[in-house]
Length: 101
Image (tube, rainbow, N blue to C red; front, side, top):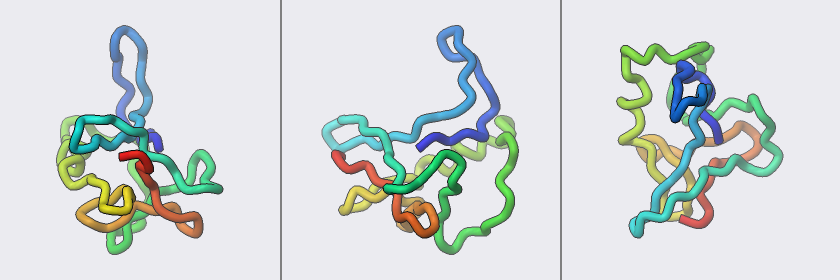
């Protein structure tokens, strides 16, 4: 899963336009968060109970929105990616997972 509405930034001399979402196990193993089967680029990730408005074209880095959200992004016992304990899903396709965490 790629978070794609971040402001472009140079990383090691290359412009980055997004962030690959990963999970880390208790042992420190890093695993890429995978979309559900059938998901396609551009599918929106939803979190039940949160407003389904139009996403920002680019997050304002001065507001530090991702930094505020990041501490509440975790995986549950079933290796499902969650925000504040609520699964992150692609509507009609299923949850995002980190299957080998």
